[in-house]
Image (cartoon, rainbow, N blue to C red):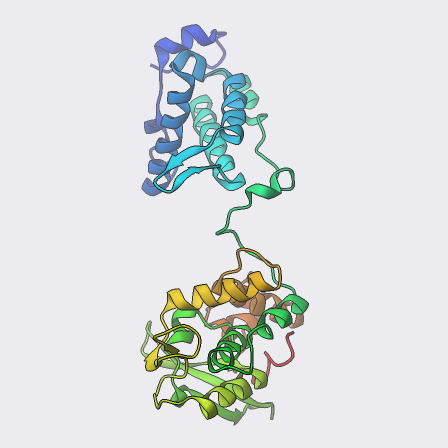
Length: 323
């Protein structure tokens, strides 16, 4: 039974009024509660007993443990990333906060848990999560897109593909499946000309337009001019290393991931993913006008401003000269 929130109770006495993550029912989504339960059990396992688990100092000890102690995976020991540590600490703090709300522990105790802060990313740069977002600057994007060797077949295709991601904001699944019939040139209502990619919106089975930069189009044309095989798909791969074994089938998303990481790594930028190219386009367009972003990326809206002032028509040429 919950204790009177005004009653003074020692941590030892609290052991007889134990609670668990079931107290979160109705305050979080079921999936969030499952995650909190997993992390809270990890915390209890580290501490050893409930009486000590309600000591804020033990959360600080667990923080140190997570920072300094690797965990074991099939590929060997790994260190927890900053995000992995902070979500665990946040889960425990949330459970303690709800316990105070429901009268299991004093508010002062929950506030003491809240004072156990997370890890600062700048203090652990070597622990950067490889799946974290990478903010790419225009200068860096230029280096990445120019990194492939234009003197080889594979390099020419890679240049075209990277420039397409950077000049369209397409998802990697959309880019690898791109066909020649999806690219069109035209003039919009404001008399702006440019190339676009025509996609089929799966929500309502209607066509929608995405921008394609002039540079991306020209590099696609360069690739298609020298490609030794015919295919409706634009980005076709090779069965062997380098230029060996040209195929008429589209590259796979995993190949796109490897391509992006390879060339970003060559210019000294770690952990870049295809979706970071999409974020790059969104960031650059938002600096021009946030209302450009939803139409360019195929979203309904990005911010309340974009929702309140929607761009009624598609604007051509907006991804030219982003980098």
